[in-house]
Length: 80
Image 1 (cartoon, rainbow, N blue to C red):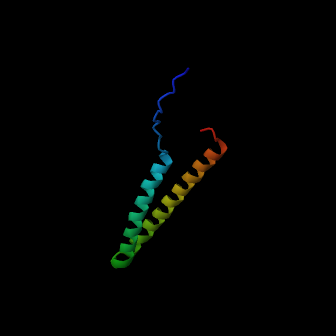
Image 2: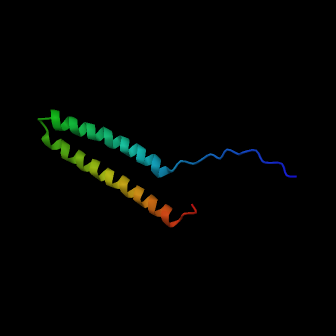
């Protein structure tokens, strides 16, 4: 008879988009804290906050777009 194989441990590869998402959301959280600090404590340069908020929103839109694209690829190519 055939001997049963030992259970092999398959190393599961992490999804690079998920890793980038976690990193980007961490950067967004720090940037939101900086924006809150700038909104509260900077009276000499009131225009310093708007570019930061625009950058935060653009980064968030890119992260959401990348995740939607990843889900579309997984839906259209279920074998991968």
